[in-house]
Amino acid sequence: AALSCHNAGVDIDEFYSEAKRALGVPLPRPGGDLKIGEKISKAWMTFRLDMCDHLFLINALCMAQCFTMLYASLSGAYGKALFGTQDDGDQLAAMQTTVTFAAGVCGPIFARLADILGFVSFSWFLTAMFCMGAGLFGQASWKAQEAASVGMQVFATLQN
Image (cartoon, rainbow, N blue to C red; front, side):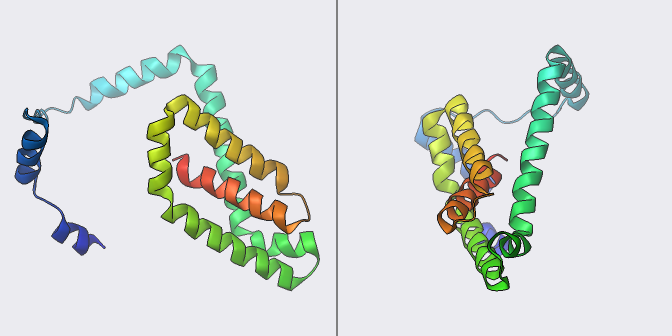
C-alpha cells in the first residue's frame, strides 16, 4: 500500500504548483520553526481554562472507546452468553467482523458527512450512534445486535 501511494502520489513541488494552478494563488510554504514549546504552553493554558470539561470529555471518550472495543473483541463469548450456544457466539463474532470491515471501508463517506454536518452536528451523530449501540447491546435479538454493532463500530471508527 505504501508503494502504491508513493507511486501514485506527487512530490511536494508538483503539489504546490498544482495548488497554485487550481487556486490561482500560491500556497504559503510552512515556516522552519515549529515552536513546539509555545504550542504546548498554549495547549496547557487552554486545558486549564476548562479543566473539568476536558477531564469529563477525556474520561467519557475513554470509557466509550473501552466499551466498544470490549464488545468487538469479546463478541464471540458475549454472543454465546447472550444467545446460549457457541454457534450463536460464532455468528455474532462473524457479524461483528463484517460490520467492522464495512465501517472501515465507509470511513471516507462518513468523513464527507462530517464536512457536510459540521463539528457539532457530527458530534451529536456520533453520540447517537454510541447510544444506539450501548442501549441495544444487551438485547437477545439479532436485529438489536446488528444495530448495536453498527452503532458502536461507526462510533469507534469515526470518533478518532
